[in-house]
Image (cartoon, rainbow, N blue to C red):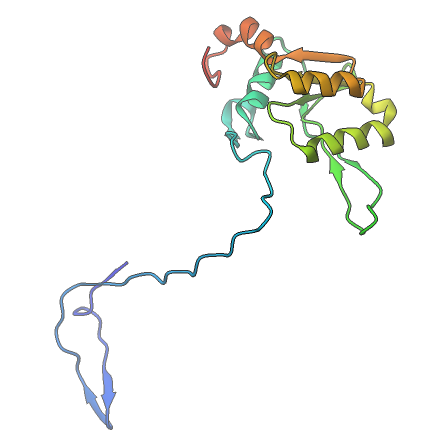
Amino acid sequence: MIIDIENERLFFTSRGKVVKPRKQKLVEVVPEIEAPKKKRKTKRGNAYQNTRTGLRQDLNGIVARSAWEANCMRALGLYKIDFQFEPKQFEFPPTANGRRHIYIPDIYLPKTDEYIEVKGYLDSRGRNKLRKFKKHYPDDFKKLIVVISKSNKANKIFFTKLGVANILYYENIKELTADKIALWEGKK
């Protein structure tokens, strides 16, 4: 920030007298530097730290958390499949320490009453939420469709063991739709 002191009409008092300040040139004000924050001993990850979260104008202003989510919604739009983005929250009973957790499926298909979860990255918190979703909402869990990568064998094993009946591969969606969608994010 630059302040022009010459143009400021400031007067200072010095021992009871009003003194006009000396003419000075532009002065640069250096912002205060914050002390570095202490690092945590244990690293807590954020599932969305490597994704492209942001507003998608072509999706009616939806803030998608990843390019995969946005592209899956674009594919649904291409085939004129009605969907809603994160319309419902599933709340779980509080944990022993009183913390409450919720699970929000990415996409809801109202005509078929199904949920779509797009999972490029699946951390332990995400796995725990999906296990709780199955345990506390078994009827809704049966309606879950998961979109994962063909190359992520760990996710495929996890979702198969969890009992997800409908697993779709992002690469297949991309192959079928990317060339038909002008705003497709990522490599076509």
